[in-house]
Image (cartoon, rainbow, N blue to C red; front, side, top):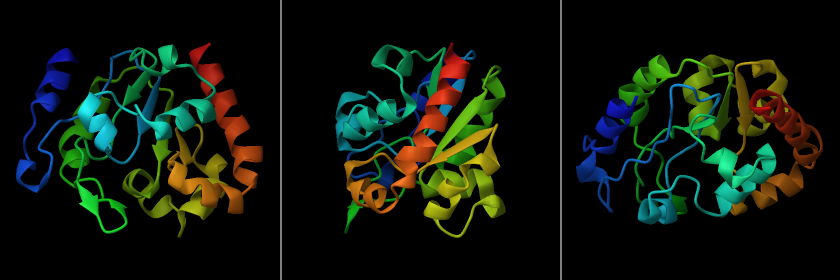
Length: 190
């Protein structure tokens, strides 16, 4: 696994499309129990090299009900984004994750992960890729039907502060989904 992580860390497949250059961000161990599949690193994560090292990461840890030590313990939690590098700035936020990463690296990573019990699919990119035709028409519908995808997948919106409006419109999320997520995480990491 260490060799594979190093190989991914040195990846430059799409360097000509990355405004800040390649800096693949990934964390995994053969014993990882939970896999987090998000979109792609933002600028803060690109600078620090630490996944989810921003407000979105704080929100995600809160949703999961775990502390920083467990979150960054790769024997417990693997972090495998859809796009491993910061994709650049778009008109209304960051660009979508590069399409090269998931087909190139996800399969070989999952082949090495022997003890995964739960995969968190965060955001529409991860949900569409992994659920394919099982995903609902909208992210809201998919998240509302989160139990449909258990026990393998737990679907979530992106924990970005930009999604506070979505959360306010969908109060059921914090009341119904978050407690179930925390229950699943606690059961797996006990």
